[in-house]
Length: 288
Image 1 (spheres, rainbow, N blue to C red):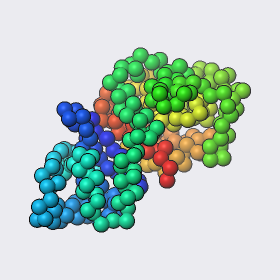
Image 2 (image 1 turned 120 degrees about the vertical axis):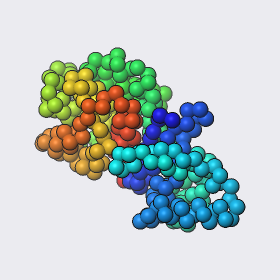
Image 3 (image 1 turned 45 degrees about the horizontal axis):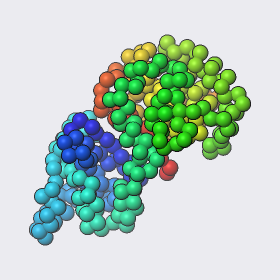
Image 4 (image 1 turned 90 degrees about the vertical axis):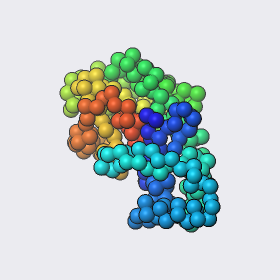
């Protein structure tokens, strides 16, 4: 079970691990209890609930598997996990006002465009595509975007021809976009400072109608990997801090540079770092 994932419900982590043999995800019940009950000790809460279910003759407890998941301290611990169908049944017996909201998120999030795109992102490392791309190029970014959103958006991989805004920010006007992208592509990328400056400029350009952040963060990691032998451990970067730093980056890139500098790692071929990076990258895009 080498695929690991972190989902986010109301900014709370829900860890999961992929069962290749049976083609299904297993989810940490302790994380789910913590997310929907706000218990100060979700592990104890689950222990008490599990005992009650056993005494009541509930067969769900027999379908629990103890799988090793990474905890906050970076170590792996045996954790009670259940498959998706069992999670749905268990959540329904937990008294919480958040139950229905959680089930809506849990059941339908994987079927959304973001959910489908995220599944594609998980397979990106195995696809071999990244190894064929020339780092720092517009074409590489287009190919990443096409891979993530192919079949989901009809403009997957295509540079936009319309001017767009987001949260009051005007991105590069469509009539100047192609020229601007050529200038960005020509920017140097031999040092950390240069690479982040290039990333900031690509973010300001926003070459696609949707999916810019998710694509560009992978593009950034590709440059770091090829040029410096490093990549970003995105799990070390707080969502609010990242979004605020990116807003400021149009006039002052020092904040995003500091965040990225503190999260660099040489584990460039570590599958878990890549998977966590995808989880956090998509989490950054979730509406609060």
